[in-house]
Image (cartoon, rainbow, N blue to C red; front, top):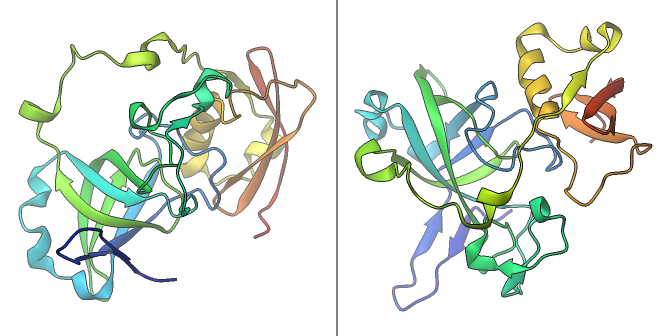
Length: 239
C-alpha cells in the first residue's frame, strides 16, 4: 500500500500519512456513523516511524478534544458522483455529496472529533495518543491531528440540515450471559452501546435476518425485531 497521496495543483505536494488509529473494528460494519457518539470506545493513535517525536505533541496534553483528518481507506475510488444516498435516510433519498459525510467523495477524507484521554510515551513507538469516541476502522490512516478549540469550533445553535429530522432512538439490547461472558469485561459496555446504536444499514429491517458484527477478535451475531436487538451467538472473527 502506498503510504502517500498526491495532491492536485501546481505545488505538487504529497500528503503524508502521519499515523494510524487502532480500534475495535476490523471491518466497516458497525462503526458508529459519527465520532463521539459512543464515548466508551477506546482507541490508540500510533505515529508512523518518522513522526515518533515527542516534541511534535508538546502541549497537546492541555487539550480535551482533537480533530483527526483521515482517509476512508476502504472507499477510495477513481470516479465520484455529485449525489449520494445517506443510509440514515433509508438509502433511497439522494443528497449532494458535499451536504453529507459520505465516504464516497472526490477526496476520500474524513473528519472526526475524539476525546484525548492521555499521551503515553512508549520506548519503541514514541508518543501514543489514547483517545475515545473514534468512528474509524482499525488501521485507518491519519493525515493530520489538530486541537479542538471550543471558543471557535463549538456552535450549539447551528442547524444540522436533514440530520435534524432523523430519529436516533437506541435499541434495547438483550445479551444472554452465555454470550456476554465471551467478551472481556472491560469491553462489554462499549460493545453494548455499539449494538444499541443499531449498526444495521438504514434500509435493512428484516426481523429474521442474522447480522454479524466484527468486534475485536469476535463476530457478534444478532437479530433485531422492532426496537429490540437480541444477541444470538459469538464466534471467533475470521479475516
